[in-house]
Length: 64
Image 1 (cartoon, rainbow, N blue to C red):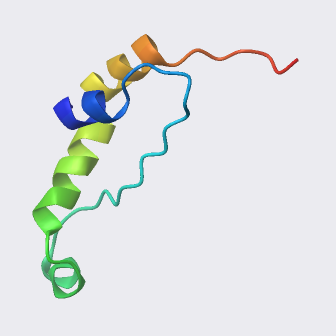
Image 2 (tube, helix red, strand yellow):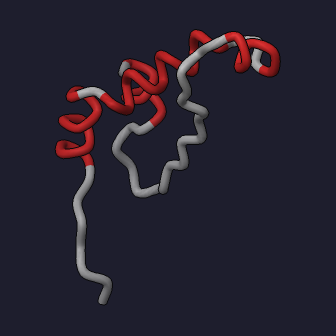
């Protein structure tokens, strides 16, 4: 959450977050040197804190 807040500071510039959430297992470990970080990404994106974070920062508008 702290990294997401730092990366997405309010500004006029769009932000693209690229990540690979996953459930770490033996198969993933064969191809990924940091499988535990994939779990942390999944947990954050799937958690209530991310939903709340989006509600505070996202505003949908009709395209003119």
